[in-house]
Image 1 (tube, rainbow, N blue to C red):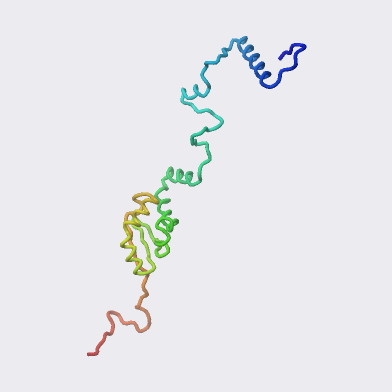
Image 2: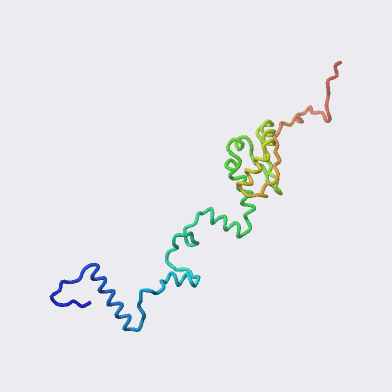
Length: 179
């Protein structure tokens, strides 16, 4: 940039304007069009359907940081593991799926062909869970998706066996003979 003698040097915005004018004049001299009404590079890119490099912008993009759970879900679906992951969720997050109250008195034992086996801590809780079966199935379906668990098999605690000992008699055994 050339300065005329006797004038003080340009500063700030005036210096920037002068540099811009000189750059435009040099571009015109080289045969390049420099004008105000041209389309921006972003508009050209949108018209072509391409994507601009650098930053992803305001909308979510595949280049943005992803949650680990979303990545794990995407991998499980792509490899066909989503059914097994849903089954594991029933066991792994049992208290979150059915609630703390039910989880403290019942435990999932098995899941085969859509039938979830649940063992209750007492016969009273087993009866209560049988009455709550539709609500429990709805909670499970909301947490892991429909079709993973279609039916519940609720059992009470394992009762002690009375068929023990040296003096066990097969059959009904001796009964009251009085009378």
